[in-house]
Image (tube, rainbow, N blue to C red):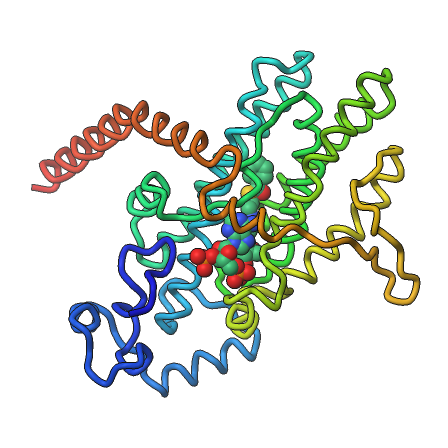
Length: 353
Ligand code: BYC
């Protein structure tokens, strides 16, 4: 049996017609699923592929292959979780921001990330999944979120580097996702990218200030660059040769560029920015290729990446514990909101009676 698709409550077998599972007999799970889910019929699939080929946007009420829907739920839920978990490393520094101006900007940025998570969870819900289920998968440790948020924030310079590198990488990735074939995801990306641009600028401003500061400040920001550079490159995912989802997502125009293409674009944009503030990127193999106009770079440590996404990064445990505590602390808010909604429904029902 295929392994469960990460982030989903059911194994993949339960979601696909039995021929795709390699068995001629429907499994118990696929029989259950077929009662509740329409199977992809060839005529509809062909019409869907034609819409994709014509560059049309797919909207929630449109017919879509079950596999397309599942891929989007996987990707969007991981993305939403990343936004929410991504609040934690920076939130740790709000109380230690060096000035009121920096504190205000950092609070606003962290709050923006919560908003990004909400837009994307809402987008995922248009695919027929329940947000509370997705959140439960995160809290249970069954869902993935971006590897980058499993690294610690050890100095104030890390606030600058996260804005410059991490939000910068997110912009490169999300500007392209703003052209994704699924309408709600693409539209969420447009607003998110606008906000990410502010985030990147506030980060780069912190970095430039420190890089032009005292020798101690310059050393602090260089040390932060050294720690974050390689994990940031890993944000773009495994190399294309080892990316099981890319080919299908490119075919369906969810992804418009591959992991390696986006990683290269990020490097090409970031190297000149590092040179401008006199900081050194920790890669002795970094070299400009005038023919391809790319900055060639050294080998990424994929063992480290795989360990982090398996849950063994420096802060995986701490991040999930923080999310679980926040979820428990927020129980009263969810209860109050449900009670209020029930009251409103009762009022409307008695007014209509
Ligand atoms: N970390 O076949 P592949 C932000 C997984 S937050 C963890 O290439 P795909 C911010 C991948 O999921 C914005 N896992 O996958 C917030 C797959 O696993 P499953 C974060 C990773 O989907 C706060 C497996 O590896 N951005 O900006 O084609 C403060 C094979 O990979 C990672 C997004 O979420 C990773 N880095 O491509 C500051 C972008 N990479 O599901 C800033 C949206 C890969 O098969 N997502 N995996 O078990 C995407 O663009 C794509 O999903 C990815 C991966 C490029 C990440």
